[in-house]
Length: 120
Image 1 (cartoon, rainbow, N blue to C red):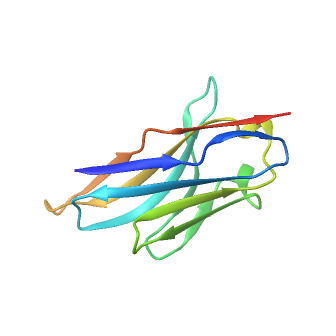
Image 2 (image 1 turned 135 degrees about the horizontal axis):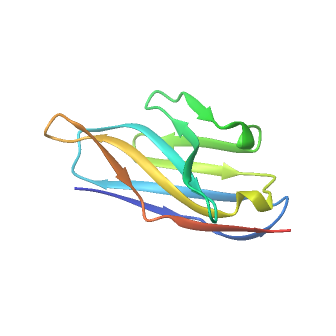
């Protein structure tokens, strides 16, 4: 059906930057919201940033002013630019997409996750 593949994670020092990318592929009609979720060690997976198909964005307070989400609708990609990284940003980042399939329904898809480690 639909595959989401993330890339761009890695190890960075506090204050540094990383850029995550996610590409959607498969058979679908359209992609609605695309989001990045953060799974910190020992915690639940939480939304970090979201972007609608029209380009409206939402950020949780902790990443506001540091992270920027963008998408390319023609390429079915979503990126997360992460600046001024903090050790608390460490964790696995998952790409999420709400995708309309041929059945007319919107389905929820997840990528496999990419590890981000921020050292102090």
